[in-house]
Image 1 (cartoon, rainbow, N blue to C red):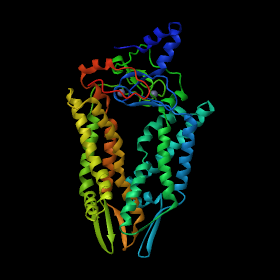
Image 2 (image 1 turned 180 degrees about the vertical axis):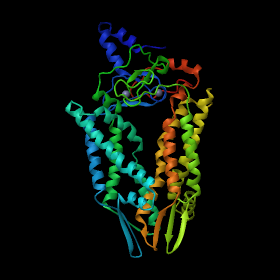
Image 3 (image 1 turned 90 degrees about the vertical axis):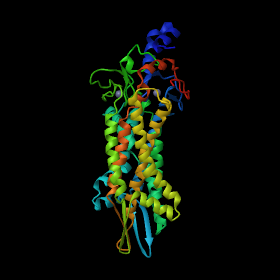
Image 4 (image 1 turned 120 degrees about the vertical axis):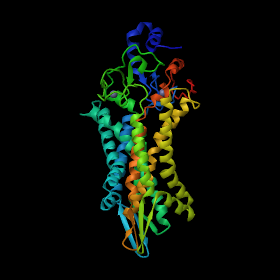
Amino acid sequence: MTSSLLTEDMQSCPAESADSSTVSRRRLRVCHECDLLLALPPLKTGEKAVCPRCNHTLVHRQANAAERSLALAIATLIMLGLSLSFPFLGFSLQGFGNGIELTETVSSLVGFHQSLVAMIVLLTVLVLPLLYLTALCWLCVGIIRGQPLPKSPLIARTLNYVTPWMMADVFVIGTLVSMIKIVGMAEVELGLSFWTVCGYALLLLFTTQSVDRDWLWQALDSKPMAPAGGLLGQAAALQGLTGCNTCGLVNQITAGGRCERCDEPLHPYQGVNTQTTLALLGAAILMYIPANLYPIMITTSLGSTEPATILGGVLLFFQSGDWPIALVILIASIFVPVGKMLSLLWLCFVVQRQQQQPMGRLTRNRLYRITEFIGRWSMVDVFVVAIMVALIHSGDLISIAPGPAALAFTSVVILTMLSAMMFDPRSIWQANPSSTDSITHTPIKLPHSSSKEHSQ
Ligand SMILES: [Zn+2]
Ligand SMILES: [Zn+2]
């Protein structure tokens, strides 16, 4: 049964209709993935609310959220500072050796005229996390003081853009893969910075997970409310409403509209549009050809030069019996990008056909989520190149240089990530106009709910 949250609350509290209406409108949210208009139930700390239709996590309340995020952000910044202050890795072979600091993984690439790849490594591992952590400290200090610091809304908006591009955790996996590669040819020494980088990556992960964006925006500015008269359990777009991707406020759709609270441009659902996704995907597929044809690393050992392509490197490890490492590179460099490109192509195809597909919408939505999640892990290979190039250079004895495929493969990772971001998951749920009636049966969600797929 279709129900209006405002009507329900007023019926249950007739004497407090005006207050109930205010409370209800504050609780309204639009699911970012399926565009359903929902109301948050009262949540205790530690509880989360998920969309009953697509299982997307809407909010996850944390105990002492500001203090917790601030403490984690400061601890992560300290780990980052330590990581930049001590030796990172070293290797020795036949009396010759080399030790590097973390920043040399970037500067060595610049030395080989791979400035673009160097810039991406620098941004994803150091600069963007540093920006994110500083911004988070700024916001949390303001919230704890009870008076947001200047420019807090602008700073909170940037968090949204920075988060998907922070890859310290992927860099740690890249470091481990590099170490296993080097162990086969030389002795590896772990510097103090290696351990602090592991701590930094782990703490960064905890920090991002501690941030409940919905709570953060409520704490910064709780005044704006959703427009009155919204019908729960119905698509927001059908009611002229849309949820802000940045702060979560439900806004009325207007031409060229911006969010009433955070001033970000609104992106109301306007039907299936896969052109940008497909254009970026096409560019990624094109770049994947040179990424595989050209060598990604060129090893010079005792005067002989040996270029290695991605697939060639995998085969070499399989032949030498290092199958765990071969498997990691095979999954990160071949299965993940190819799987991601195929699944995005397939999703674009099914949403354009606008008819019921054998695979349910929830399954398609899960596929989209997996595609978006795994994309960044392909950067493992790029980080391996950065570390190997920095670490292994002992003149004619053994040296490694980046090949042309390094830039091509980095472009594939960036383009596929952008392509997944441009895909609008709402089109999975609304591709078939005749199916919108199924939305009306969606119940109001409860904390920790894990409902079945209602709309199949
Ligand atoms: Zn949903
Ligand atoms: Zn907003």
